[in-house]
Image 1: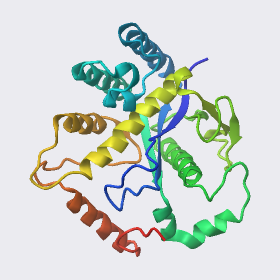
Image 2 (image 1 turned 135 degrees about the vertical axis):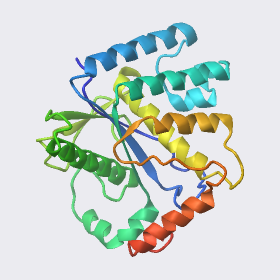
Image 3 (image 1 turned 45 degrees about the vertical axis):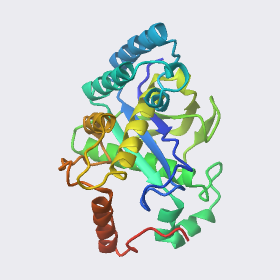
Image 4 (image 1 turned 180 degrees about the vertical axis):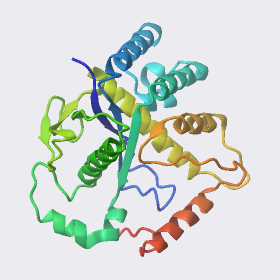
Length: 284
């Protein structure tokens, strides 16, 4: 079975300390990676070589980048330089194949920006999806945006017209489960999401990498003060994330001495004001 498809994994950040009102504890974030049929065999071959290597050298059964970064589990006694190499190799693989990456967050605070709209959706029972759950809304928003971008790419003749199967790491549902999507996107996506264990899916391990890099980069920037330089490991993360083929995020070159949490929050508050929203998300 070839690995072409769209693979989704979460960032695992619920309950994480909020460094900013724009990164609230209630948020749920997901990353998706698109693996087109035309390059799927090469991606799978490269990943299998990578996985065989970490199994032989470190006794690891899969790539889980939170563990690699933190030095947990089988990575506990592995030298930092060796762990950095894992990020470098994965960055080279994902950027080398130019795999499209998408990212979506949602939170209770952002729900309150359009409370009446989301409250109205809760009246519609579209089982098994629950519009009271932040993780469900965030997941479905990611799928919806993926379809929109695939449509735009087709119109510009920059992408194939294949219909993608969507796969997700287990969490919303168990390994092997299939949940029907509440959209009719049959020209772009198959009707159900298939849930898989990351250990048995190289595609989800790639999505795990993207989810970790983007989420970590957000925390790095929101922990930055004017005049202070980034730590070495933080610079490495930011460099890696800048090399990915982002479909939903923009990459900007900034002055390391000038960038700060306060400066980014100012820009976000300004953008919210221009959209007619409160300058900061409300938790009630």
